[in-house]
Image (tube, rainbow, N blue to C red; front, top):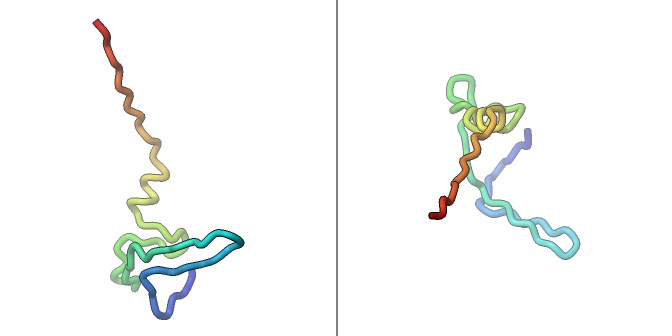
Length: 66
């Protein structure tokens, strides 16, 4: 897990002709009592892990012509 001393809202990285911009989306307090479902090894929340594990249900719309 990456350690961040002072979190910034926007980080910029330049690689060749491209500039990559990263935005701080979530910040979790991670102690033994308060972890809010955040897994330190996978760097995902329980909801994100559940979304990756469970298969998606595909909805299809059918257009019926008269």
